[in-house]
Image (cartoon, rainbow, N blue to C red; front, top):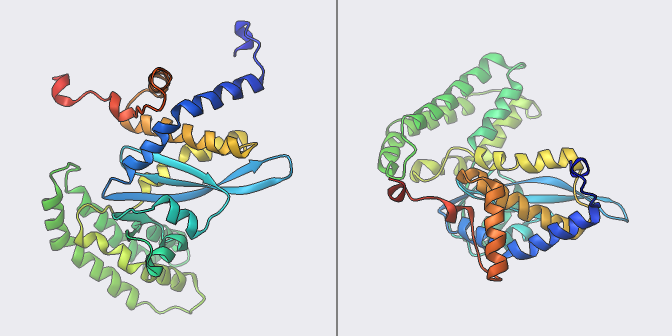
Length: 300
């Protein structure tokens, strides 16, 4: 595209410019993590990322934390609990995840102050995969899970709806959860069957799956965080990964800021331009996409 406009710029020059931007925007990137960890619930998930350095191609991991209006990525060579401990250091809210062992290890061991909540969408997918083999049995539990989601849809997604959500969960969701538990306890299947494994998966996560009943702020699933990973997955398909460790840091920063801008309804290009100009004018300054939002009363 640049060549058609008469601009002959090699890839090294483009990289140098991108890395310079990274240096200016790093304070905003770190402030984004602080903002996310200030929320009562965060979603956590991870996906692989390729580091293609000169020695070999290695599988690294993109760790993602997300809320309804912010996304933070960190690309790391390890998938261990130590990464989670560093990423969530001091966090005391609720971490919504798929039950990956790294999150649960810290809770059981004691250093983590957060509470775990688990994703009903992951449980649902287990039974969807088995539906062709156990159509009648799986339809029963899928209908019950569907009713759980139906209850949630009766409550408006507003900040002042917590009391109503608590009320309908007490009146309706608790009964549905008991019916799901009773359904699972009544199934008969061999220990190595897919059905038995799906039920075991659900019961292993049962405390986290039912935590939403006592806290109206907890969502039923982690789908928002999975959506936040789509940009990374698409980038991985297009260019395979990063060519250096520095490249992983640059990728994590730009995926974080751009995806957050999109969640806020802010044009990413305009946000990056304003954030860069602000950082150049005052090195170390922070500008997040949320700072560009016009308050409702001001707009009126």
